[in-house]
Image 1 (cartoon, rainbow, N blue to C red):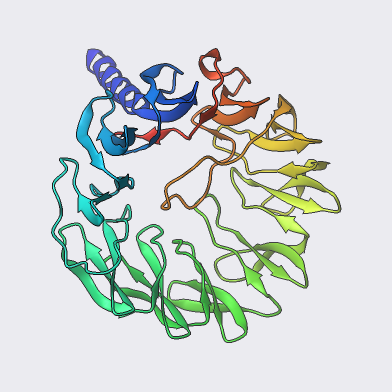
Image 2: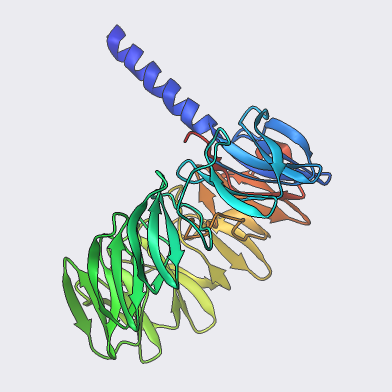
Length: 379
């Protein structure tokens, strides 16, 4: 029994530590600082300009030079750069005396064969490498993963990137392996469930190496991790399909958003409501706008000019008195977050920004000139 209690304590303590390592950039009285998920300042507002944490480092401006601080607010890399970008996969781009370079968390410069444009490393540990109008991939060891081969490489999503040569699109992995042959006129972003594609004038879904085609479709949207369904358009109406490119919910809606937590916002006429994966109406069409449900079981909905939050039965849990929008994100964050995550939602109340909990109470009882999304600082 004592062993079980000890194990529970260790797991709880470690989970608390990880959760406590999320910090958000805030602006108050024209100065930037950082708060934790309890609403406490871990780094008091003191900087004229600052950026989100990327891993355990954040870029801040002192005088006219940029440097990087750690989660304690101490200088990890002294301010010495004219411009900086966020750390990703252990490296950041910095501009010093007209020259861009990659640096690691100690400030050491990574030696690379780059001669033309420098690109950020992705979270998958690769950066684009350009030579004579062709693109390849550079690894964090400073060596080429693949030689410059492609006309276009799009940002990596879950370890995969769309690539183009001439008019043909395909997909590669972060090691350069061709996952989808370059034979499509259009191609969506990677998801393990499937990738929408267009060959000639025909749309379909590439799944398990097979191109499943659809008749009468003129647009398909990307799959996401929250559902086995994505949406497609036919005759100006939108419905939901599976990875075999089969209609699961017939196209009857003017607008839709993705399924999350078993429900999807859909629009008909002049109002939004929610349906389940059977296409059944679960929440009545009562809202001017609606976003997806979070894991907390709440979704943002708009009544007149402002946003509130409903539960999965459609009951208003937090009154509509806020504005919501996605905060600034790195270029690697594909889906801007609106609504709750880990029990907190970023909202604007009057002219101030802050976070509210699932009861509608402001985090720390405080509002700011601006707040950004909480960022994981553990790696």
